[in-house]
Length: 216
Length: 216
Image 1 (cartoon, rainbow over the protein chains, first blue to last red):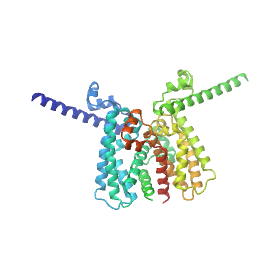
Image 2: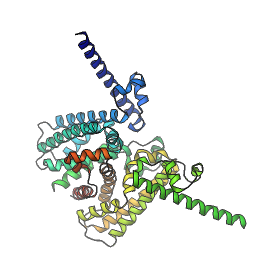
Image 3: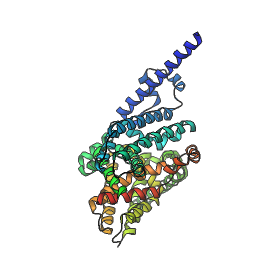
Image 4: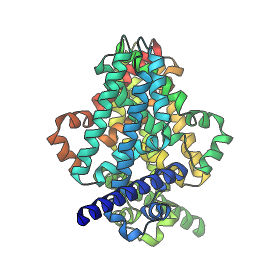
């Protein structure tokens, strides 16, 4: 009995520490960008001893992939609740719903570059499988919600546009968050800044064109 | 007279060594992916002493940004010569020309992720300015060539699609070049592989839809 309670207590502690590490990583990524986030900074911010980190996550990639997985769950929840009961949505309205539901989680937008570049490749195969399974579940649910909300967009067309969204959002997020040096350059040459510094409106423009194009 | 000759000789040597470093970096990036390329490996492959590297490039970012700059020049040359004298090109034909001219330089496709993520941000402002100037010159020339080859696509529409191309190509290149672990997973779950392992056909599909959408 005592042993069971102790194990339960220890499982609960472990879950709390994992959650604290994920929260710390999210805050650091929001502040500095995903690229700059180190495991050492995460453990310090979570108030844990670095030597114990491996009890909770295999690696930096493992931890950040978990953030990306949560990002998919949150995106799905926002988009599906926005489109719940919606009908006859136009291409522009669908584009706005997708872009707004993504823009609400800037760390997820940043992670979209890092997932195929280094995170998925840097974890054990079973971890990658779990990520793929959960992200595809979210993707399928969102595609079904988009198709249900539109008279013209079917599930196949929604899949094409939502897959393209990942690439467009990943790229637009990186170019719209330049370093201070590059930001100074954009002030000097407004055309360059105009091309770079616009995440949500540009995503809406491109997704609207894609919805029109795939249903034409 | 002697001093002038010596200086000319030394300038020529320097240019040759820079070119050798760039060729070595290109080969390594083609083989291993841009992410894995280190300055140490580049200097070894070019047969130079690592201690002298700073005479040619400020940093890894500086060297790789030069490769990206050459990538823009090559892309422009391929696309503009393909579209030279072309008229009445359809959306699908324009998409094919853009995708094929990009796919011809896989290292440039890989670099498209790294430029906004780390390269532009990691160099001196004057170096970033030069990159921006030259890449925008290439972009403008390509947009003019696309508009001239089409009855429906104007320069404004070409600019929207070519900007989106950068993001789509960057993302599709990374997902279509998985690690061995991830590639094994794609063999186990064909749907995941199907979604990932298709660079040029998927780019053509998305660019065709975008051209139709922006001219609708």
